[in-house]
Length: 431
Image (cartoon, rainbow, N blue to C red):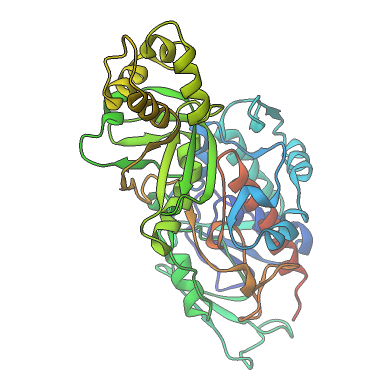
């Protein structure tokens, strides 16, 4: 066995499997590679971070939303749903729950469907992964930032077996010859954690393409100037976000908790639609984003409600919305909220309640984003093994791929599923 240490900086000269990136997907791939291949196989996980697992520790407000009780391909964007489904089915949610239970981490399901450790501590999840890596014989080497992965000629020296070393993994602290490489560097979100886009550069250098655009996902959105929604900072309520074309065709809708901030909007519904807005505006700059403050209502039903009300519009709206918001909607429609409304003002108010236009100017960027939209397309990967179709012996897992999930543990489930497939396949590869 090659024991894992918490802070080993010595990079071995050779490895059977080098896992580049020791976050959620990387640790999982390494664990399954070690378990599958056994103690005669040297598995090395290399990461540039001084302390591993930064993203795991901050996830879910420090509690780590490990997965969701139901995960299907339509919870993700990026690559095609059928391709994503093939990977998810190889290691579904029940297998995730079983893995962590065996590792001593019991999970609890909350009303939202999210699964958290019963300890409510992300540290529990990270410690379990590190312990399982140790047990599987994985050597974690960090901080050692990988700067290049070189594919070696087919006739490279076979080393101590008949199987050739296919790669040279170059770090800022030395290099390592590896027979197989699993690339698990993440995308570009939370770059302080190490996922600063280096994985995309490494993949390109080995012949892969990266989808365009690459944009933040699960990121708060910014509103123009002194927009009145900014005056509602701190207000949280359920709402529906609607992304439409210039002509009004609906592209995507999300519904859930929405937070007004001094910069714009955040909260689950906003985070979920953010990547769709950012990608769509690249293809069609005139796309529009609207918000329905009463998700169950339509302009017609609100109009009817206002017509039949015996009190003024402010009193009607206050029954269903926070007062600060109700007052702002009335003000934007051109009424004090008291007395009768003209037909035009009533129609305007109904439209504002159910489809307030959002003048989004941008987002808070990768430094704040919880995920990355874009990456290595699944069409360039063998979905049965997660091996590159372009560079034999190279495998992929996690966020470096063009797959990003909605908020709620879905991105972690993608890390577990793809990490399992890549790790087990790399261990079985004797090509």
